Image (cartoon, rainbow, N blue to C red; front, side, top):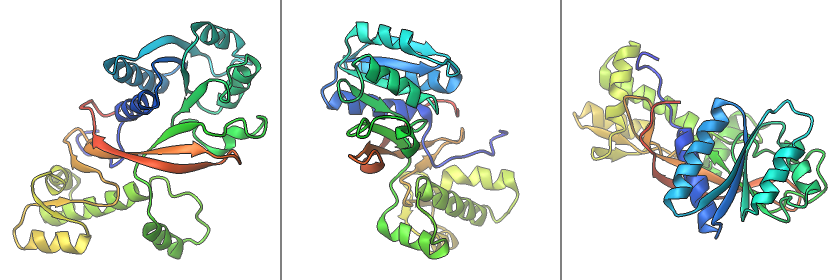
Length: 272
């Protein structure tokens, strides 16, 4: 990336940490992981396992599966044998079939608590499952929740919008880039990149809008932009050191809605 890539959304390592904290805080002490066989799923599963173990929880099974399989009953049987308090499913579009197999085995979401992640925390997950099968299931989606004021502003531009995931992060990415260009007095990519960690640094003069921050820069002040995403102190490797993670839940209608937001320190890890 040549030092030119930054993100306001948190990395996978933070999502695994938050999901482990959610499960542990809800009283789960033994968890089984079902994980898609790719690097994406492996990183989340590794992150979750490390964080859950640090809380003295136990991962009692970790089943890696091929998403192209027609059935996941063999993996589900091993999960059932481990008798976990909860199941964490790091899957993608095949997750509906996996959950169907969990239900058939008597360890569906209404029998054993199920946790999801942003790869499968989606309204389409309910397609093909019994009505109400996902009620109460929680999962994580990276990023802050867009408040009503931000949603109204976006709808004023595009009234057909129905999904505001990553809206705060997208907004802040634009503002941070503009402020970094202002601080650099340049539009050259390398010059902007060098300023991004500086205009978001914790400890500088806090400001919350482009105009306010720009005026501080013109007055010679070092700034710390604090936008709606909550992302702060973007590091030279591109990650934010502080960021937000949304907690979402399926309702009785098998549709997801936000229920909480976790803001905290992001584990120091390479950009991935």
